Structures are given as C-alpha cells and as structure tokens.
Amino acid sequence: MDNTDIQQLFSIQNSNEFDSLAMEIFRFQYSANAIYGTYCDYLGKSPSNVANPLEIPFLPIEFFKLKTVVSTPKKPEVIFESSGTTQNTTSKHYVANLSLYERSFMEAFTLFYGPVEELCILALLPSYLERSGSSLVYMVNELVSRSQHPNSGFYLYNLQDLHQKLKTQEASGSKTLLIGVSFALLDLAEQFPIPLKHTTIMETGGMKGRRKELIRTELHDILKSAFGVPNIHSEYGMTELLSQAYSQGNGIFRTPPWMKVLTRDTEDPLSLQSHGKTGGINLIDLANIHSCSFIATQDLGKTYANGSFEILGRFDNSDIRGCNLMAL
Image: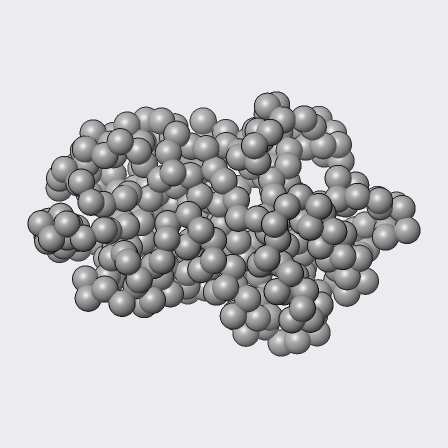
C-alpha cells in the first residue's frame, strides 16, 4: 500500500469508496499478512471468492496476544501493548508507521471536536501513565502537545491540582476537554465536585479493579450530577486499532469515515447480523493497513442504520481490558 492509498483512506466520501478501499486492503492483507492469510485460508476465504466487504473474514482479536500480526516487513516504530495482569497475556500492536496513527487520531478528533488548538486538554489517566506502551497515552500526549494551551497537561493522583485548574479554566471561559479513566473521574467527582459550563468530560472506560464496576448510565449519572453537565462523552478505542470512535452523549458512538462497525451472531461467529440486534462487535479500521483492518472483538453491542453503534458489554469468557467500556 502506497501513499496514494493512504490519501484515499482519509478522503473517503461515501460507502462505495469505503467498500472499494476495504476490498483493496483485504486483497493486500491476505497476501502480505501471514497470520491473517492463513486464517482466511482455514475458513476457505480468499480474494478469489470474496466479492464484497460483508464476506471478508474478521480476525479474532485474541491473535494479537498470540502472534505478531503485521502486513509489512518494516521494523515497527513502536509496539503498543494492552493493559493486563500477571495472570493474562497482553495484546501487542506492532505499528510500522506512527505518522499514520497520528493522522488517524488527529483527523478523527478534529472531525468530532474541532481544532485541538482551540482547546485546553486535561488528562486524568493514572492507570495508563503507570505503565509503558499505552496507545491512549500516546494519543492524548499528542493532543496535549498540539493544543498549545499553557494549562494543558496530565494528572496522576493530584486531584486537588486538577480541581484548581478546572476552576481557572471555568473562570476564564476557555473551552476545555477533561479526558479520564472512569475510576479516576469518580474519585474527582466525589472529592472535588464543581459545576462546569465550559468543560467537556470524556471517559475512556475501565475501573481497572480500583472500584466496583458500574453500568454506563450509573457512571454517567454520577458524573453529570457532580459536574452539572448535560452529557458525558466517551472514547472507544483499543490497542489493536489505529482509529477511535466517539460518543457525545447517551452512549451512542460514531466513527470516522474510514472506520465501520458490524455485529456478528453470538452463536455463529462467522455470520453477520442486521442492525438493532445485540451481537459481537466486528471492526473495520482501514487505517490499520500495516496490521489487520478486519477484527472480531470480544465486545457486545448494537449497530444502527445511520452508522452509529453502542457497546453493551463483553463476552463472559473474555478478559477485562482497560480501554473497554463497562459491561451493562
């Protein structure tokens, strides 16, 4: 895949262009990605008998824990690693082109939230900062850096300092985005509630074993009450992807044009199902050119005809992972 294909990726205008590029990337990854190609062969699928994107096989996300899932011989510029414990194996994403990841998350963020230069970014991500290899920390660090706002920055457990910064931002009327892991946002809500008129709160999910799991509506109701905001925003991403989806309220997520969400039958993992039914989440992330763009996750959810989706939980036998939202 060359620079022309990457330019096509970020200029997709409609479903036909998406489908055309998805088929091109499938043909490329079938040949270039040994793990994915072998998996497709096992299912009896290849470019010779896959006629449209709905027939493309989705690689189970567990392969990122067991194998090196790459579509290029190029040495990775970075290896992102999922959060985990000593009892389980972490996923590894070998990223061959960091600039592609940066372009993907910056263009998606700008699409939903406007130019980052117009925002102050406050990041409350203690669990992620305490380990290395987090793709979320890399993304938010870039957002903080590119915002160029003097008050932008990370906070570990210094909630009082963050509270003071929020007061300063509110007093100035400056547009602010507070992005945080769920348990830390709850700590802030309990210890330092403050009405916020100019601040958007975005949770990335995950209690990380620090608190009792809450359903999303409970979490959002607590945060809305403590901070006096009408909606809590959410980010949906994972180590194995180069793109993110965003919810600007009510748990309904939308994707950038180069990303698509489908659902599969929970009883038949090779069968896709129609909108409005709960199923396993399958993701097409066309930015994942050098890895695998077609991934079957362990999340459960629903899709809707307008392209939006919601996350409803996880399969019972799957690991709890940091970037996933709480189970409902």
